[in-house]
Image (cartoon, rainbow, N blue to C red; front, top):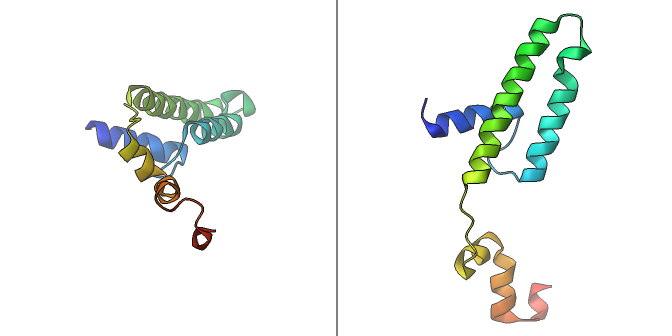
Length: 97
């Protein structure tokens, strides 16, 4: 399994979309662990396996996020927030409100 396939599999296990942020990742992880924690049931084996997969997925996703290089260039920031570029170009233009 290549790196993309591993990250994609982890994303799907956690029920994440293709775009997310750290807070959503944490929320999904906590939600799933509350639901599938092995202490929640007498049939421990199924929940133990689910919890193991959830922990693996969370580890893969957080490792990817920790290794990700963030860009602080104007071009990338404006690409991610197009309203900043519009505001810089047109200022307080009434058409943009």
